[in-house]
Image (cartoon, rainbow over all chains, first blue to last red):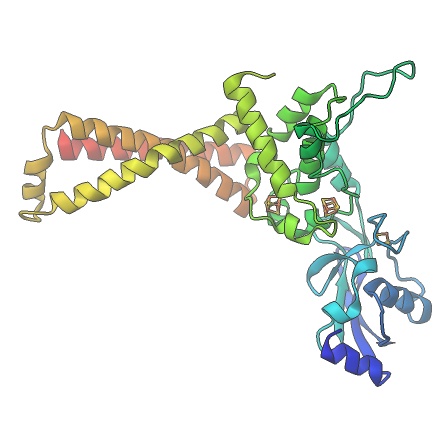
Length: 248
Length: 109
Ligand code: SF4
Ligand code: SF4
Ligand code: FES
């Protein structure tokens, strides 16, 4: 706990919280909420909705870092609010909470996730299997190189934190972004996926991997600790190998 | 797969540029010895088929490499339409090619 926040908590002090109200056009509203020990940013937002602004719009579900729906920009950084303790991020008892960057703002802290998932589709992120219910489940060796490569992204919970952290997404509307490309990377390494080549070509097509700057902002911010950067590099390698060596 | 091709070309030309730039820098150090006037330098460079080929290659590689980067920068930093950016980058590449080859001709030809 930072000194300022713990002081505030000890003295029964207050947090000054600026919250985005409105959609694309809007303004910050400031609320004073009691500083408590062990309080997350989501707790603070909930407290504001309960006691100050019942019409405040925001999203959450699990409150324990599983669903990925509570991501917001906290003091300028994209984060899961349910897993972010106020003491780690408050500066002198002050918090600024905004919706995620790089997505249209619907209302207050809720943004429209549709463009994010449209990009998953555009990156070829849809699984296409060939097995029927009569077939046995595919036996995938957990130690195989492909299965291990897919580990880079298999735990992604679609929270869009990386999407918000990526500057290229902000600059280039066509860029598919880290999460969509990481999804493509897990799919091209999935032995059961039949459209492997199509996924690879789309991930390397317009707005794809070639636009990534490989600076790893996505990786630095992913709350699960995944590395879209690595997945994107893998897609580039695989695509070049397909081009020079012929596809296997 | 234009994006993939451009990506590969950018990397391959970067690979070629590394030794080309080093040789060029070395040459600059040597070429300035014994008089710095245009006439003196030209007297040492003119008529060399080897250097004409070297710099001809240099210019071609640059004319491929630079516009691909410029295209990315324009895409990210201007609101221009895709097509406009592609044409601008192509125009820039042709300009580099034209100006560069003309310079090679002037110095070695
Ligand atoms: S490494 Fe690539 S995808 Fe990740 S933040 Fe940077 S540009 Fe975006
Ligand atoms: S890669 Fe990480 S930050 Fe990006 S959507 Fe998946 S879980 Fe969230
Ligand atoms: S509410 Fe589910 S991850 Fe935060």
